[in-house]
Length: 291
Image 1 (tube, rainbow, N blue to C red):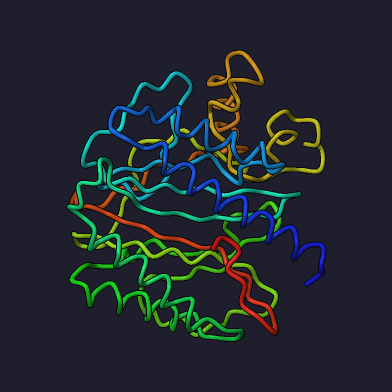
Image 2: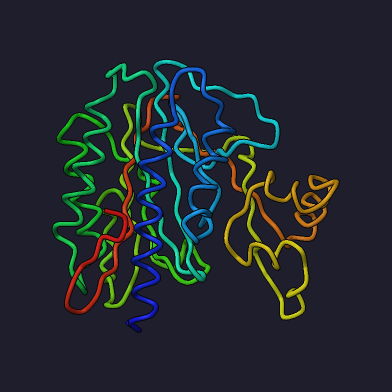
C-alpha cells in the first residue's frame, strides 16, 4: 500500500476513534439526538476530516441507519440501548467504528454489549492475510452464541475503499461457508451485531441517510456529488445547501440517482448491540486504525 494512502487511513481511524469516544460522553437522559450527531460531526470537521457518513444513533431493537433530521426533537431516555456508529474521512479514505452504551448506565444489557466487544476482539486476533472469510464469521458467531445470544445473520462487516464505505467484501457474523479470502493491502470493517432475539433484521422507515448510486461523468457540478461524492450524506446536511431540500432529494430518488437507507430493526423487536473497528490487512502487519 502506498505510504501516503496508509497514513491517511491511519489518520482517519484516529479521528474516528476520538469522535466515537466524544459522542458517547454526550449521551445522557434528556439529550437530543440532534445535538449528539451535530457535535460529533463537528468534532470530526474540527480535526481536519469530514464524516465518512452521518452519525448513526440507533436504539433498542434498531441496528443501524437512524440519523436525526433538521429540527429533530427526539431525546434519549434512561435505559435506551444506543448504537453509536460513525467514522472520519481524509481525502476520501475512511474509517468506520461503533460502540453500544446504555443511557443512564442501567446495566441491563452489559452482557450483550460485552458479547459484541469480545467477538470483535477475537475476530481481530485471528485476522491475517488470506484468511477465509467464513473463519472470521465463525469466530464471531461462536463468541456471541457462547454468551447466550444470537448473531445477526443478515448484517455484517465490509470492505472499505476510497469514497466507498461498503465495498465488495461482506464479512458475516456467523459461518456462512464463504471460502473467499481477505487479500493483502485491504481495509475492512468488522462489526459484530448480537441480539437477544432471533438474530434477523428487516427494513423499517427511512433513516434520513442517502447516497448517490450511479454518478456519471457529467455530475461533477451536481450539488450532491460536488459536496458528498459517493459517501453517504444526511438530509440535514442538504438542508444547509439549498431550500426545498426534501423535494430535491425526492426528485433525485425518483430518477434512481439517489437512494435512501432504511432503519434496520430486529424482527422480534428484541435488543441489539454492536461493536466495530476498521482494520488494515497488510502483508506484514494488521493495523486497527480505530483502536
